[in-house]
Image 1 (cartoon, rainbow, N blue to C red):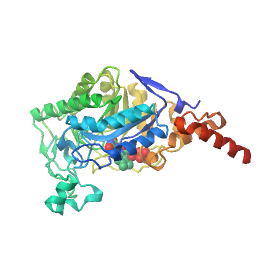
Image 2: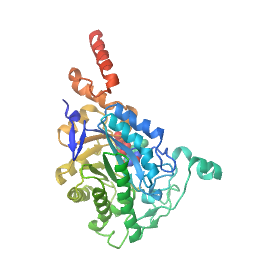
Image 3: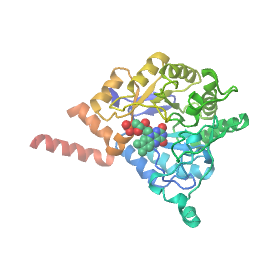
Image 4: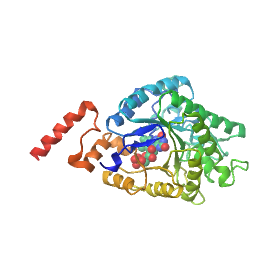
Length: 377
Ligand SMILES: Cc1cc2nc3c(=O)[nH]c(=O)nc-3n(C[C@H](O)[C@H](O)[C@H](O)COP(=O)(O)O)c2cc1C
């Protein structure tokens, strides 16, 4: 069998294969509550054969949401709202994961398709669930001074930082209660934890700023708290921006050092993305972030997920087979083809494919169809 479709186990969780749906914000929740949209959007990837499906960046506090329409996990009603998602993914033998997030100074930004709301009537805003607030950050430095979508943040006090750590742990407890098999800490894309990591956004002069060791303090505290909260048989991943791709910013060498620390805390995999600061520049192309996953896997000795234009099945298989990464994550490739795993497996295995990755309701019929097509050419 193609290595991409070999099962793999982390702690008490077995992934039926190494294909993963990367977290994708839908900006479709009200009051942080997941709804039918999230169930169907995520559920179709389970039907398509993905080994794991991760729920979008989920606010651990209301002010930690990227927008007013993000999913959240700061109250128990939000636990109930996510239960149908974990139940359905589990029923399809797909690992359910959720990305726990705090947007920091990139919070309270507009939802692209509701840019009319800030100027709408109060009743219209209430109807849609619109909210607007001042974001928080390591330092009172705006994300992009020339972009009105971003606001001047409030610099977190030490007590408030401790509150953020508690909020991540509380959200991890709720994720467990909602039935998730694992969680991912979002430390990438220029959001709060990444803001602490990077000298671009972190101008603090206390124990959370200055040296790399100090800038890593928040992510290590959050991860330790999440790990301590989640049952031991449930994996914890951390998504990082392996490089800010900006002069004077965080780089791969920093990421390797961080990955070693995270491994020591019991983290099961590093999900290797990049970028997120206005100052960063990188030209995406197929597999452009794989070198990050490869460097971290080999130099820190920890499992990695690769992401970024990885829709080519042969290339995805080669990445796993050559030991560049352990998991292949797709975001837009999964939107484009929610059945990507069943198609990729067929492409890689040809006649040896037994169609077992299809849901039972479809497998035999798809096998018949392939036989007929093979006969008629
Ligand atoms: C619609 C959409 C929403 C996204 N939301 C998130 C998110 O919630 N958390 C995150 O870490 N990355 C997010 N990303 C980034 C993806 O997870 C992924 O890293 C990126 O799109 C590159 O993979 P791709 O080329 O397969 O799309 C999002 C991407 C898309 C397209």
